[in-house]
Length: 333
Image (cartoon, rainbow, N blue to C red; front, top):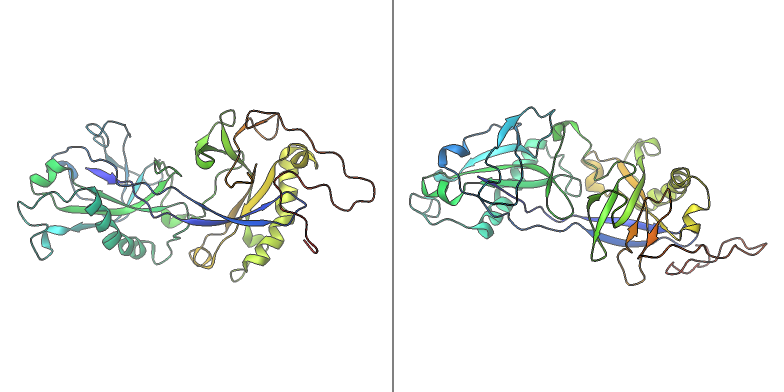
């Protein structure tokens, strides 16, 4: 048995600001992973699982041993998969899933996930699934050996993929959680070719660091706010939160870092997502992120070099000199 690691890539609007320049919109994308290579198991090992069952296993890089210790656990315990529905493909018409039919392969299993599991998860969550949230739609399917012995069950469910497609542990059922795609304050997100990767220790190379998690219901208790209203609120709120996190008001400028936050779209708001992050990193003129080593609360290196604070603003100047790579200051910006 094996889980398809493919998760629909979700785009999130991110706003960048240096604290004084006009915020710029960019779009970041989580890496979409293809189906994970399956490991051989017997047909009886696949078993059956009811909706709401949570499954855990010890991941390995060896397809011969990965997921071989798969077991049902309480959803309150760490787990990697929550079952939405089992689908018996043997009852489907045609010969594709009949006795002696050839093994579909990972590409076809990915198609089956899209055809069957999106609806299964929507039914399970009650049309409250956030397509841009931290959970993804997953599929477990029989190994080639299990298929040869007649196993035809597909298992649809939800899982939490990292930016690189690895399945992370979850505590608690998706039915009881805010699905917002946020990381805890103090988390550093690794970097791979200027693109955010998976969480790492802040002493390791990373793209950005989460400085605060903001619950938008504090400002917007009713219907979903417009993106502009969110930006207006978060520019001040995130600036204050980041200054507090870094320890002093000019830290962001002195370290030549970029403040950015994300916003929640209508579909995510209707699904119940309410939290966003305020983070600090270094935007590159060419796009993407610079590589940072060290927590932003202390001494850091940016692309291997200690940041040099820009000159102080002249007396009477309302706004400080823009940092290299920052958006130009425009009238009214």
